[in-house]
Image (cartoon, rainbow, N blue to C red):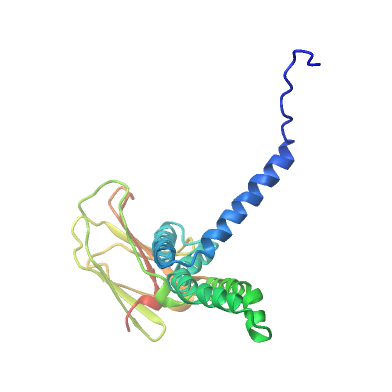
Length: 238
């Protein structure tokens, strides 16, 4: 006989509930990863392409403000490699692995079907680690940093490289009291007289991930920064 009380189902403990959520999320992720219809392949490729562009441009922008944040080079390398590896994975690698798996053949086909995706991911990670440790010049580009005071002073900084020296000059010296050149927080040059031309030895520049770079600050008579330019020696034309 019923005692008049309705029994409520027992809830899973927090750890068990968390495990089920993670397992379900992993299964959903794998189903999306192996989705092989044409629309899914195009969507995944386009999504990874735009995500790679976002990371690549975003880390270059952050490095313009914080050149000492070396870990950003690995994020940059991830985004840069994703531009090619994302579409390559979902347009070629994954369909090939699925085809081998459905063939039911043994030998090499069975090996590819079982380990192809892992080998592809491992290769991608190795490429990211190499590019993050030894970044290519084509991975980096420069942003002109805005001033703190909203000044109208906005000249063009033109730099050329010859042997081990970088020569720079300012296109318009009006409104500028002095130019300060630093690298890695250390002052390399202070120019107090127009036209504010200067030379910097590449050997005196500090390197971030093997990339020699320097910062040029245009200051007013109060020492406030009007404009700041971040330059990488490898990107300066000879």
